[in-house]
Amino acid sequence: MSHAPPEPPRTPERWAIATHNEGPLHAALKDWYAEPGDRLEVPVAGRQIDLVRGELLIEIQTGSFRALRSKLRELVGHHPIRLVYPIPVAKWIVRQSPGGKVLGRRKSPLRGRVEHAFSELVSLPRLFLEENFSFEILLVQAEEVRRFEAGRARRRKGWVIVERRLLSVVSSRRVEGPDGLLEFLPANLPRPFTTSDLASGLGIRRDLAQKMAYCLREARAIEALGRGRSGIRYRATQARSSGPNS
Image (cartoon, rainbow, N blue to C red; front, side):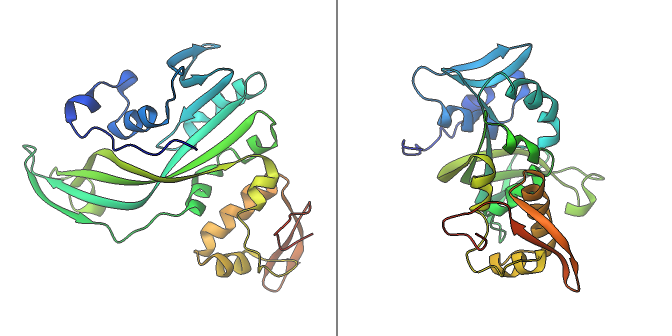
């Protein structure tokens, strides 16, 4: 996108002005993404749309894509739709007491990357076959506010996530169609390749590489050639200028 990311307002009062019980992160991203002339929270065919830009419907999703499947499938045949998804490349954890007092703030060692979008894209990979569909990843810096509530969130020892806040948008990447998905494949993949090759080439876990392969296969960007000793072998179904298969 062309506009530079402004710093979002930091006041809880601003974030509280959110419709349909949306969280602070969603509200701030919608404000950042909106351009002059955009319409916010517009009903289209009985569905509420975050942003409408001319003919384009824009949905910003900060949670599971599964909840959007029926909505997007109903609309994509008649309207151009863009799904926008934030991934935190840097995140700070803010801990609060039950009364809301800040107890501390630290930077999480976890860093998101664009490939993490495939953990959610497994819910709707075939939308990339639709000419009306586009997908945009926003790499962001964010805060995650946690509050201690005894007896809840066992994995976090009682620390419950109460809200997420946008600090800045670092960069964006737009993906359109099967060709766009092929751009996620590293140039040094063998021909054909396995998910182990994909994981090694990108430096990611194999389970994430498997989700990527599933999405690309469902979108007909790659095809399975059969199973070998090291797993299912894949190749691209079409040429790519910098790709491993042509």
